[in-house]
Length: 454
Image (cartoon, rainbow, N blue to C red; front, side, top):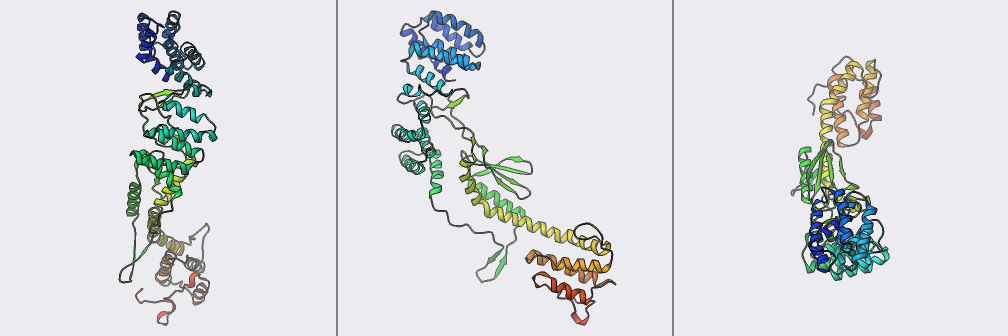
């Protein structure tokens, strides 16, 4: 807590003694009370009353009392003690700062401007953010001029300019700062700010299953799901996303870069990029916490406290640009992986499920779809022909139709209930994609063909 940290500072106690606000015995007693304040807060409060009777002009008494009350969750009492500290030592900048910050975190910002002092970045940030948006622009510009070599100040000013609708100015100011000093976090933020204003990169190669070789021949590219998933993992790693933890049915990938969405890759082929919510932020520097919510104030070169950290919860609006960019960066690998999975699943269907379904239809009258029963051989032949003729006009549909055609030739035509010429002609007329049973009628025998299948 800021108030307690300031109250514990030896220079403030020594200053009370130097200015005659307390004697050495009272200063030593305050030191003892400070060390006990966390263990015995109620006893410390009681003893502080007696010290306050003896040294009412020493603000450390009231700042320490405010810190203890704040630690007990009694905000109003804490503010009252800080008001008294301001009354007795309003010229002390530490007292003014503690008083202004504490009131600001309750929504009362009128003390911030009076408490501002040179080199107090944290107070500057609180004060600027308390202003209307139209008034913040000039203050962010001023902050950049006063802290030209401070990465924390520059980053805060850039974020402020973006929030009040000046993103291009933020980019320009950030590029100028990068010429003065090198800071990885600043460079990363500038790159993200510039991205919306830069032309899109050249298109990456689209997923393709056919590759044209130098001699003009075409080579079919077949990706296994395992290989395609490995390429997706490699692409995520190239972009900075690494496996972080498992989620039900998949893996979550995170990046060390601040405020970036996580990616969930599921074993069933789904890939979901975080839309909003809690994001990973860099570890906050060791610093002070102030206000009702315990907001952290990081350290700055002055040795005091610095930039107020943002919340770890980010809105969908702010996360959307990074989410869209990541989805565009990985879509070729995601598409290849899904295509490989679909091909594998389809091959499994052709090799394992379709033959059993065809056999059950022909032997037992079990329809390919729906309930009921096909009781007569004619109904079963018609159902097989309908399934053959209705397959999609695609490589997969052709493969499925070929399997049905093979079954008709080797199973149905080898039985006593063979296809009739009328059934075949009617099926070919109604078949999609102009399909025909090419083996029908070979050697002049429409009922049976013993030649080797192609």
